[in-house]
Image (cartoon, rainbow, N blue to C red; front, side, top):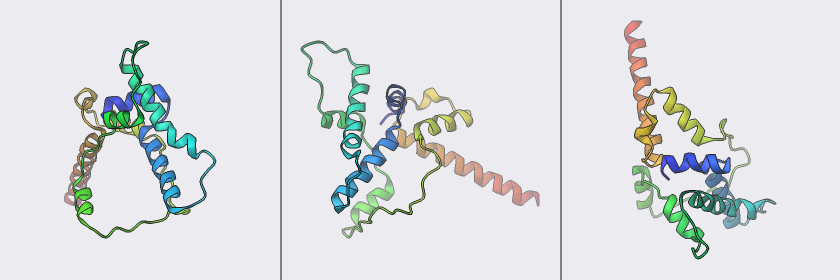
Length: 162
């Protein structure tokens, strides 16, 4: 998903696309492994499709005779993913291990990754406009690499100063 679309998704729906997809994936894992399904299973599964339709309707003029796109079309329009090198390596492995969801899994501190991404861009004094048309996965990877380089430079300065 492009950064501008993920920001607009958040503005329109009040929820974060990353969190919505993560929760949907977690519930689908429960279903595929035969666990008891949570009470809000149906609402959670349909939430992403409904919110993508809201996003689509925001950017398109629709008339009485216009058909609304299906969930599959909306997913193909907005949720393209940039293949990661580690994903390519994992795809080459024929043996895959399926792990059951852990009840002891550590919960992340931040619930809204889109907002965290925007805050990190602003804090790093980068121009948001240059990232606006890029895919969010690419923007996140760029910011992570910049942060890693800055940390490495700070470590070098600390070692050199001692």
